[in-house]
Amino acid sequence: MSKKLPTGFPENFLWGSATAANQLEGAYNVGGKGLSSADVIPYISKENRTKDNNMEISSQTLAKVLKGELDNENYPKRYGIDFYHTYDSDLALMEEMGYKAFRISIAWSRIFPQGDELEPNEEGLKFYDDLVNSIIAHGMEPVITLSHYETPVGLTEKWNAWVDRRTIACFERFARACFERLADRVKYWLNFNEINVVLHSPFTGGGIVIDRVPEDKREQAVYQALHHEYVASALAAKALHEIRPDALMGCMLARSPAYPLRADPADILLAQQFDNINNLQFIDIFTTGEYPAFLRRMWKDKGIKIDIQYGDMEVMKLNPIQYISISYYMSYCVTTDEEANKNKQAGNIVQGVKNPYVKASDWGWAIDPLGLRVALTGLWDRYHLPIFIVENGLGAYDKLEGDKIHDDYRINYHRDHIAAMKEAIKDGVEVMGYLTWSGIDLVSMSTSEMSKRYGFIYVDLDDYCKGSGKRYKKDSFYWYQKVIKSNGEDLA
Ligand code: BGP
Image (cartoon, rainbow, N blue to C red; front, side, top):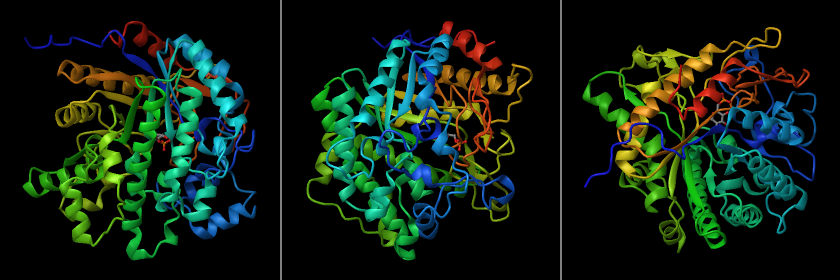
């Protein structure tokens, strides 16, 4: 007898929001915390920025930052929205919206300030202990990412972080310390946020200063770093299940489907290859513990040789992930047509060609709700594993009018994406939950702007960390509250 067709969201669906330590905690040098990769990237104003984002650093600039020679620069991620001190009242607002789940990350350098210490920093652990207790006390299920763009700079300085095999043991120690302290209350874990981003931004993704690697070996170094991340993830999953057998470890991917711009078979093939390399290879590896043939072929064609040591593949194979998680912001187009390739579109890390059928955000990111259904059904067909949407949202300028923010554009964005997700569920895709990016305004990952806002709660701070820090409920706050209360049935 076949399974009954779903008609809507399941009873235990996890509605909520997601955050990352480096974008909201602040307190970058409090409680023994060391510097992370996010703390050394300054804000560059739009006029002075040379590209859409600001996620890389040169060895020269990093040296200056560490010597304190650039202390007069603006580093919004060091201050975030001061969540380190305000989390309890912020979580009360999330509770008011009716959240079932709340995603945080653990700043690795709060627990191991340089990254390679042998013993964890108790003050850091205590902070997350209290934070997790507060999330639970406010009625939410905690979801924790181990590594969300915050590699300790100490590891970058010692051996260029993930490029070096020694980072595996440091991560395993970090993960184990987190599990020993928190896994009794935390069931849902994620290894690396948007693991595919390291291909495009080695520093943000993996603490790698790419100019320290000879130019012709850079791609190889990134794949070597990824190999280390897979082994480390597998060891972490193993530790988690030793400590709590029913806990779930997921992988996390920035899932931006690549569309062919034209029906030309060359574009169709290119889109498939783009998807495989930018997105699907990662899930293939996390689910099977093997490197897919298309990737090995690419390595061979490019002369890339990965140092895989005895036992690596076995540990990867024995410790696969239990669920897939994705961030979904946009889709993009690819084409072999040279002329059309000049019409590039900004985006969440991966750049593509502008799609004439979809609108774009204030930052030029394609807005494509149907793409979420495409992404979900595609993943389900390939892996048949539950999927957790752990990020989806619109970065927009908001205007505070009195104490109100009328953000109908944000409501429309989420409404259309939730409707598309519901259709995917009706198609048979097992979706565990939907966490918006974000519940509360926080510092932008790619541009370090505060003015690129994602929350249902407005935070009165500007790009220069100036303002009262006061929180205001946007119109979308009340809308999301209604959505959760009706378990996704009332999207009006
Ligand atoms: C994802 C990241 C988040 C986040 C979001 C929005 O890629 O996981 O950390 O910030 O994108 O991006 P941005 O803040 O650059 O607009």
